[in-house]
Image: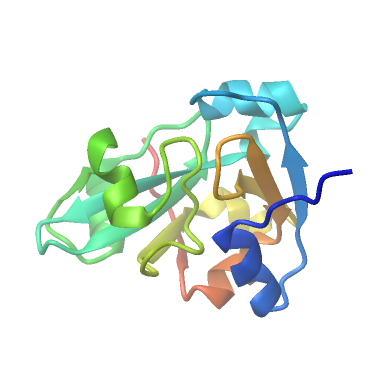
Length: 158
């Protein structure tokens, strides 16, 4: 049987002694988070997507929110102390994060960006995020994640 290749995200979690499980699915190209959750039988409110934005200052930020919700750019900017933030263009995702669209996760990026996780995750024992490549999801504790990456929980959705 072929050995599962670890992503930077998995290596980061292991280095920081954070328990996680991996779910994989067959996928040759990007599919949105809602379809990913449905394909794996994951609840939509426990499956989070990672969006990367750039603030007016030029700094980059990660925002994690349930896959069926939309990011409120004003709330997102406010929670990270920026006047405004703009979502990263798809063509720039790999250059900035080291990950591809559909495989972007807030851990194991080229650089650890300040991260805000939607406040609904704070009450969840576990949630799903991208595992660092298309076709891979990681299930872990949102509180442990936020603690380890010095993130925050915030109301960041419309």
